[in-house]
Image (cartoon, rainbow, N blue to C red; front, side, top):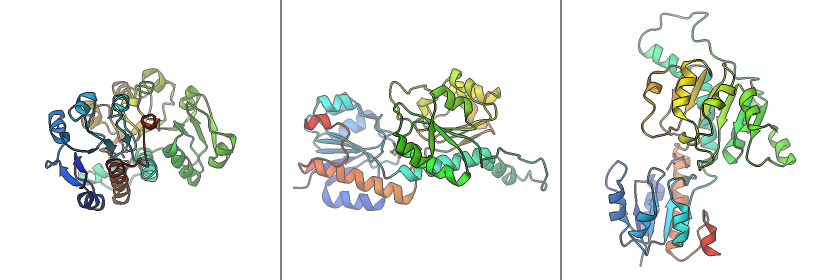
Length: 324
Ligand code: 8YV
């Protein structure tokens, strides 16, 4: 008998096909997020739940199906799942680490370059037929080559961002809860600084921490005020790491120069001012959005989900305590 799986949103074709072949599958029929009530309805009687970052999975949802065997997230982050509640109920939670590292690092660079060189602003200018010809003072941006890149967090994605900085001759400084080994610092050519010092000394600050209680609003008014008035902040991590209201003020009053954002405090809503600010590049949470990456993420999530449903330990377990 095939395991029963509930999937909260269509996946790319390859993982979708695998899942449909190997599971008795029910898929959210809508092209939108499900409500909590719909998720509760969906998981009744299934073995596995394959869900997305946009699905908040709490203890109440888990209790709707006492036989739920696994919660497989289609994301590396899992701040949408109450992992403690899952562990308490002995439900394995899985994620998709590693496969989206490069695409997310690329996106951080896309935002950095776009903000520095005013690419989106220029695009709007040309499209709206305002361009009257080349001008020596037109859309002057900020130099990228040789500027200092500051990384907040130093996990897989930050390290991939750091490697790319070599091509731009950029010194890279970082802060992380735990410092890298001297060998890793040398290999990546990065230098450790205090949190405040990274903010003070960088021309570009890129955020790469997971969202948890300690990192919510890690960057607020005080932190933004430490940054250079010519600096740019990039966020491809999680929106709530930056106090978005404080960011709007800092961008309006010249505390910092610009921002490149892929994530927001209350997605898909943004602080209203952001929509109209020319010194902000805004993307709709695209970090992992390449065909190759989303296919790998889907395959990994399917593998994790089916492994548990078929009685095996999943390759990417977030809460190993449950097997202790
Ligand atoms: C996805 C992400 O775009 O994996 C993550 O944690 O933020 C991104 O890869 C999205 O979360 C897909 O569910």
